[in-house]
Length: 252
Length: 303
Image (cartoon, rainbow over the protein chains, first blue to last red):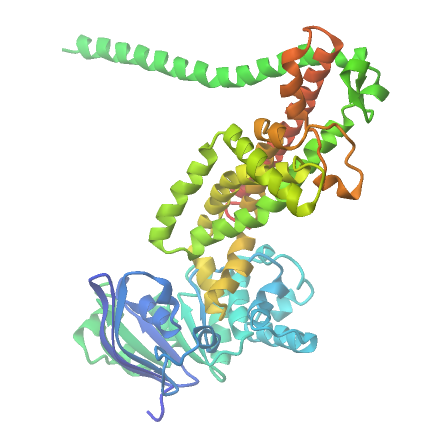
């Protein structure tokens, strides 16, 4: 792999003395969908939150190893954390519309970043809602409260909110766990379109979803990276016995 | 071996019944007391409304010795002092709540929270004394007004007294904002301050409104400190400098005059009339505060 977008170098992470990640080394390619999967408690979400430094405010944790984004150490002293988070967007398991209208939600990040140019804001609004496959459904009611949307729409709104900032990397933590199959399908479809432009890392909410959307997949078990391979290889001829047992449903 | 447990069960049933009945009586009696107090107020106060003509009662002069019972200056006096207090206490209280909840390190929070609760326990007469002898002279000298016993002095003290209520209720409201809201804000590249002011505080809006209303209820009903520092002149606060002139509140009027009034006289009834107005006002404020809490619960969150 030439010049990975993100390079994890022996990353270990602990809450107190409880090491939830151990020596994870991994390269993530640009413009693709990378899936982190494994049973609950295997450290996937913690790893995701390390990549945009959301765990900075959690007390009593310790981290070892390095995470490089475009070759730059994101835990280096020259990193401006809010700027990093604008480059590495994140969508959470539960749709989290903020108080306010649909328009305000999408433009929240841009306004926080101090952008006031109306034509640019309008352009971002339409672009990001279109990318999140929500524009057609909400274009006539942009000034309605965001809470009027259905759960699936709210989640796509949250994706649009992250996309408005034009990040390089998009982290998604079980983004469809609270959604019905049709909404899930819509979110997955929008991911296929998005990978042309973004590097996507996603923790799926099921093995089936992992197998549907991954370009490459990483299987985690108890904080350890067991196997990392392109989708086809990992789901049809896994090298590790534990991966095979998990993807064939023998445990988990 | 069968009869005995049954007897025991029956006995336990009786015990349950008695305890439940006792609790029920105690619970309902609280409501009963409030009703009785209100009935008493009505009995003593309602005669005012036919003994004194409406034009007199809602007039601009309160001189009971000349049979002038204009409650307007007292109402406005209370309103002005309360509004001044809230305008001072709102930014201070919310800022303190934000600091304690969101910014302060753990050890500072543990020191600050009990200290704030101690504030609520300071007797108002002590604060009044402090206001009279420290704040009032300060205001008189720095502003060059004839007396330091002014609306502003009263507002300052009341703000101080409303602060503990506002801080602790606002802090609870901030605490109730799910951590995920903070994550969402931070994940969009907001700084910690931007997250607090643009995500967390707006999400806690209804709780903060409740905090302010409860603080207001506290301020409007406060008597002693206000009586000591507002000068107690029943004048209409219509001039621009009213903020720095004496005023007289409803509570102070009742407290100052009740001891010297002949029971059953028109003046006596008028004081209870004021009490009715006060009671209704605080009731209204608390009702609004409670309804914002209720709305928040019904919607199952902070939206």
